[in-house]
Image (cartoon, rainbow, N blue to C red):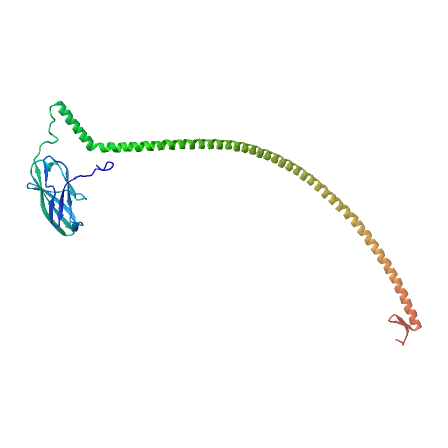
Length: 302
């Protein structure tokens, strides 16, 4: 295991490629082994080829399940008996297929596996169980426990940070509460001012409505008075016109009479003048005189 919860796979043996030849480092394993990892190490000249692996046990051949990192795992079935396990590989690229040689792994004799019974002595049994438990704990939980301890420590640090943040937030909440109270007070003051303003507006509206009503009433009264006065004036004008017409008619008649009299007087006076003028002309004729350019001359001199 590596870091936090990351297991590093142990490579049990490597199969080394040298051009078209391969060799196996650590060419043996023991019976009852399980899940051993093998790695194929490429020749650098074949790094861009696809890899296939094959395994043979006795007369049976199987395709190996190769991983992206050129590793494969053999489970317990390959190590159930003492025998030889052979491996072979092929490299492919486009239409090209290159088969490599064969290497063998020898499964050697040993004894004891997970099915082996415990010793009958109680103390030995307890010791064996304790060792098993310790080994299991070491392999499966020790690293995780360390991670949990580290996480706990980090959690404690974060908890302290949260407490500090909480204190800051509490102070901020107090400030917010104070600001909220101030806002409420300001709102209350504003509401009071608005109420007073509304009362003033209502008072103004009522006063204005009363004044408008009074003005309207006064205006109507004055209009009615003016209407009555207009009727009176019209009646007076009509009466004056009728009276004037009579007087003018009377004066016209009198003037005509006076004018006719004056015309008669002027006509009489003119006639008298014409008569006198005719008498004067006759007298001048009798004397042999005449009037030329308003001068009296003897006949024959003009």
